[in-house]
Image 1 (tube, rainbow, N blue to C red):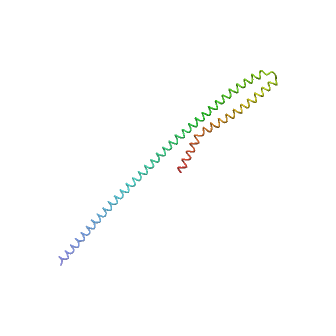
Image 2: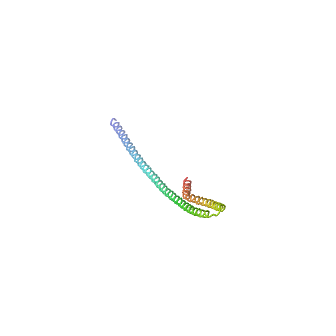
Image 3: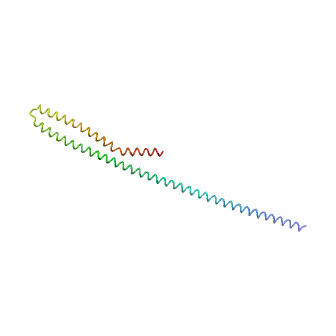
Length: 179
């Protein structure tokens, strides 16, 4: 009976040892599989995060480049508007200067002619009439010249501001559209 008990204890210990061994092997395999699965999931998530980050960075870089390109285009157009405005202003100044020179020359010639005419007057009455006629015509010519100069100046200012106004309008429309 002692042999039977020893055999039974030995079998029970062997069975328990095999069970523990199998349980440890199963647990080890499960832990290993879970760890491998977790590592694969982590790796996949890391790759997705890296890809998403790279995509976002690329999109930001593309938008920044597009924004800088648009800013460059706007700057060029603004500079062109300023140059066109300056050219229109210069043209207006040239027209006004030419008009002033022509008026001054004609006024001088008219004044010389009036002085010659007045110098040939035969009486004080005739001299006063010639002087009054010349003063009236000189005043009328001056007022007409001021009106013409005002028209030229107004047109010049309008032409000078036109390119800048167009750029301001275009910029406002672009900014409102971007909202």
